[in-house]
Amino acid sequence: MVARAHTVAFQGVEARPVEVQCAVTPGLPAFSIVGLPDKAVSEARDRVRSALSGMAIALPSKRITINLSPADLPKEGSHFDLPIALALLAALEIVPADAAEATLALGELSLDGSLVPVVGALPAAMTAAAEDWLLLCPEASSAEAAWVDAAKVIGATSLSAVVRHFTGQAPIDAARPGEVSAAAFERDLREVKGQERAKRALEIAAAGRHHMIMIGTPGSGKSMLAARIPGILPPLTPVEALETSMIHSLCGLLDQGGISRTRPFREPHHTASMAAIVGGGKGAKPGEISLAHNGVLFMDEFPEFPRTVLETLRQPIETGEVMVARANAHVKYPCRFMLVAAANPCRCGYLSDPARACARVPVCGEDYLGRISGPLMDRFDLRIEVPPVAFTDLDLPPSAEGSAEVAARVAAARAVQTARFGGHPTLRQNADAEGKALEEIATPDAEGRDLLLTAADRFGLSARAYHRILRVARTIADLAGEPDIRRPHIAEALSFRVSAKALN
Image 1 (tube, one colour):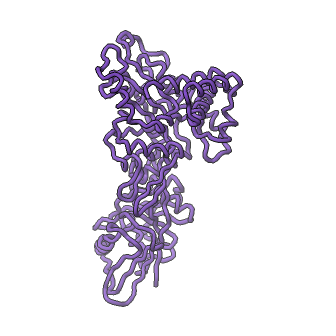
Image 2: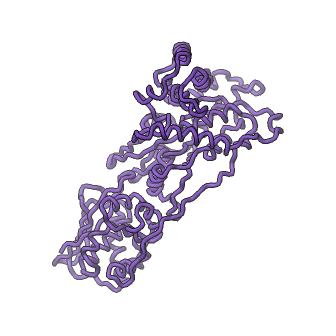
Image 3: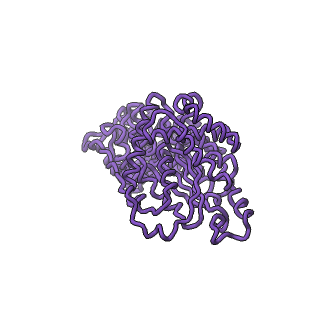
């Protein structure tokens, strides 16, 4: 008799179904696992044997073979313990075979039979719902899985509880979704003194999901401004929350199974490796750019990042997804994020400060910002210079306008974009528009077109820069509540594009 259960193997955010087949046949006593398992999966037999022994279940003196199908799909992780044990219990006729076959299970077993939480319960629940299977997982992982279909998710504390459930002795209640966490933003734009132009740039970037770079002397407030971006962003939509949570589930970042409606804000250190930023390592795990999906990736000290790391950002910025290619894995992750970079004008940081200018002008700045290649710099929609704040400004009272007021305008502009792109599957914000879609939504009036063509010729703008200016102008018009793009919108978009040209 061959008993079956189901589980998943993770390839990026996709959870691919895996059939766990168990055959107990006459022969020399053995317990083997086949089907391209890694070391953690191969060690499952010892954990399963110990867990069954703790339940006073002795394995027969026969040959036990576990096959993980499809056999050419790599199997990684300790979550295969529970489905292997479930298939074996069905083969030993301890639990009903038909119930095991209709179950997708994942979970790690302790030697005493208790179930240890594992990552990836949310993507696994998506696969279980698509195949109309019951999802069985550790109780600590059930809260996040229940967000998909709570009626078809059960969380067990131990293997003995699983046996009692399937034999009808003590059925397990359906799981309940975790709490929706709502972040309280303590950092408010009202606390930022001066820097009105930078605040305006933040508002435009947040409204249209435009990439932005801030260049200024140390202590001018670049990091302070970036830290207040989450407070002006609208909450994640249900679809975006599910997309983001699936990635965070693979990394074990969901707190007690709760799904957050707050947009991610990731700020990796400039010593981070390429695998940490882009993704990779064992199993090709998601990197910071994927963890920032639907949110913000803030890269402080931007030129200090390794050149190879910076150059790998060019394609994900354009496509909104990244392919992590390794010798044994090719995994695709979504990474539609807003890149906010901060940099000093030179190595010492005081190139633009007339009171403290360094002696290596202008070579110091050219060498330092020269680490950012032209093609990468061309992908920033907004480039602003953040000047030092005057001491007299620090004594001024807080601004009357804070994050709440800016967030209201950003939310209104994004609502306009949601209505505009409602029928398109891949377009959500103005920064996503390209080709025909961009022509339809961002055609300026005659005066605006003349100004843009004149600027493109005078400043030698690339075709990419031309289109990015149109996207920014579309966002500026949305913030103003105007349906058409006019000359003032083009002029403001150009001011954020060419004002830092001398710093390249």
